[in-house]
Image 1: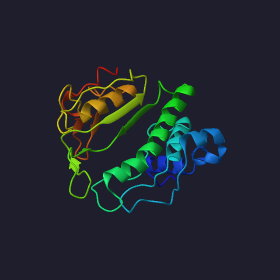
Image 2: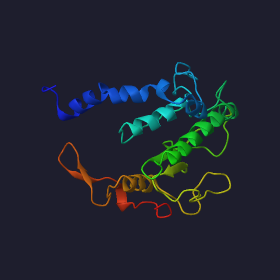
Image 3: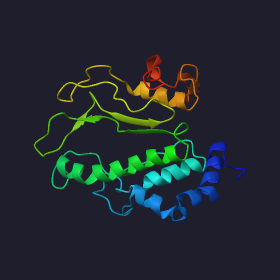
Image 4: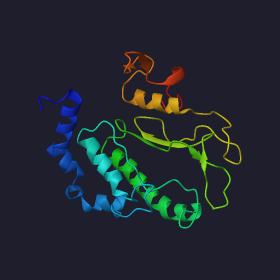
Length: 221
């Protein structure tokens, strides 16, 4: 271990930690809680482009947070709905949304019931939206003009819709929210002042955590 840098030592410490092993072991969880989240086959994928449809990953995320993890990422199913056989948007919606809805609802309720809703922020999003029109393969392609995000917990004022699109869902209309604003909100929830905190790149140059002085979403704070 002495030959490793601090980051490698930290990573090895995490991977060999009994707390991590226990957090990943869902057999330690109340079966009723597991059933609330739902279960899926970890080995079954829609295709090579995407993750398994495994709702119990959301439960694992909660257990990792309780074990001390500061940030947890859950990759659920496949959202690249360009269309084609078995990948048209209507099939994907019918198969993915009900399972996802159950799992994310269980997670948010679980966090509230355990008193973690003020400390844990939940963010559901992708890197862009989908085209407002359906293509010839009965799918939707990449659309960077507008997207959506779902936020919960973190002591935020939830239960509201912020911003809107035009009637086709293709362009931002009222109160556009930027990615930087979402990141600034998450930093705020972590107790980090994105206006003051910087990181240094490989050239030794400092950079702010968010661009253009983006502020936390005022409606949530």
